[in-house]
Amino acid sequence: MENPEKLTREVTQWLAEIAALRQQLADAQQAIAETEASAKHWRQLYNTEAEQRRKEAEQAREEIDRLRKELDLLSHRPLVLDAETRSRAEEDIAQLTTEELQEKYVETCLQRDRLQGQVAELIEALEAEKADRAKTRAELTSALADAVDLLSKAKGTGNSQQ
Image (cartoon, rainbow, N blue to C red; front, side, top):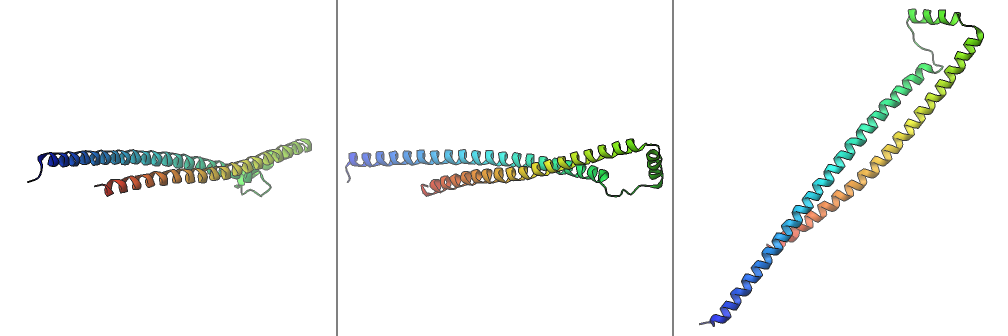
């Protein structure tokens, strides 16, 4: 028969080891929960940022399209006008003096140049926005990957101790 003191010590050691393993398991589960919360947070940030970038890009595209249409109307390209509109325009032009025509021409050229400048600025802003979006996507993807790695490691640690 074994010594009761020895059995008591062994049981006490086992109980202490079980308690330590339970604590490790609880710590691992806590780490998993924190990592999952962090991953969820980063996913939300990524999705919010991506949606904002999509909206901004769409607004920029719409503004560029609007300015291009306006530029087309004011450029030297011949306009396709209905007969009534063309007739009214010709009557208006016929009533203008040479100086007034020259002034209108200069105003139109200045407006065309201003609109071309705006289109160029918007195109540049759109390209910068695309670059910012790509950078943000890369940063958020990296952060999300790090969170997933931590989650995988935490789950692996939890599984190996069970």
